[in-house]
Figure (cartoon, helix red, strand yellow):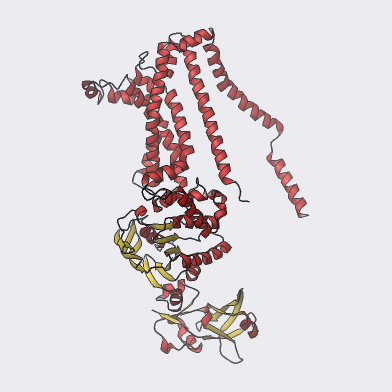
Length: 347
Length: 293
């Protein structure tokens, strides 16, 4: 295992940031620590880095116990949320910093350092900016320089705190792809923290979902999406419709084609794309109407209103491809029938 | 159409924002008048009085052994107190900006204490502690160590009044800059000292220099606290400000104003340095903030 944490707990006063967390990350993975704000993901990252001390538990990097080692001896690369570039140094000096502060006997000659720094700047495609100051760079450029600086010391693991959090949406999209490719080329075990599930699913090879200082689920993005371990994960990853069977939904679910025989709990979570819509044929007893829809590129997001047997209305969301929706010739206010293809059941 | 209405809107906005001419001239005139009357005129008087009996009298009174001793003592006091205040200021600012601990706000208030307390009281406190009837006085005199009415007392009193200068400059600055760059340096393998000298110091250097400059000006110019503990022994415990007062009281006006002219020159030099610092800082900011083309 490249990174292991064993029974880590951390409290800030009365607040429990991490509650007995254990996690193993194999060599070469690109792992996302995903969770809502305040779930403890950044704290966990900082404890692995050594920027924060755990109250209990141990951290292992490449099999070595580093719990009591200070951050400077852990050989990690850390990329900060707001980049933390040295503002009084040029881009070149920023990247060279980690090489220049080494003790004299380990330090490379200035020529070798210069060569290495330029190679790193080329890797992040910013060598032409080497004599600029951080204030003269755009957010995306700063992020890439921060990454080059962290890579300069040849870290055994790379830790990134909300690496795309402070960037524009368009820059973020590009950088995600770029980081994925870079990781593929370098193959450094990496962990990044994010609250954006889309980002985690897109970039990571493994996703760890955290909530209230505990790990809810760990697995490949596809696994987590298709087989959420509990209601929190199901709600947090992707869109989902929640049907509570205590509230008159049982009958309705049955008419929607979801037999309660396969029911494994009281609450059914249904992904929007697992709902099929058909135009209601005359005479059928249906109480679902089409309220509105939005274009999401290739998909249409459909907002339906279901008036329950007891009279209260609830919104249901469905998604289907553009052309399929067009073929249905639906208008606002039309009565429709639903068919649910698949549901996740939770207690 | 849009552009036209926008410009006319701007013009009308400008009109309502600018005051009538007479208000402007009256305010500028008032400011200049007050500065002239209360700042420039006294400075001029100092020079006129200093040179009232000619250049030779002026230079004679400045080269008088007592005057020279006063200047030497003033320099010595500044030389000792400024580095101590700087070390204190940096460590206090570091502690307050970087750590959370109980009583932090009390500490910040205490650092400001010398600003709010009359310097005379500071001097009196030292008399109470180190005086012949004070708490520690008998012990020190038994061990033949002179604090009061000697150089150590003057340095202590000056330290008291100059303590806040560097810390006050650095605390808000370090709080604003935050801890992330230092954490980045540590994560890159830098030691604590390397982090301090290569990352922390360059980020706060202008604030630090400004604080040191103000502290130095105060250390050389302090009168009240030093006056209480010095004992006014000519040639031994008179600093330059005290020398000015003693000479004046003895109707040696040329000597008194000559000393005052040296202090005034120090003030001017301080101001020049301060302006220079601000200018340099702006230049540096401009150099690093040029827009990306």
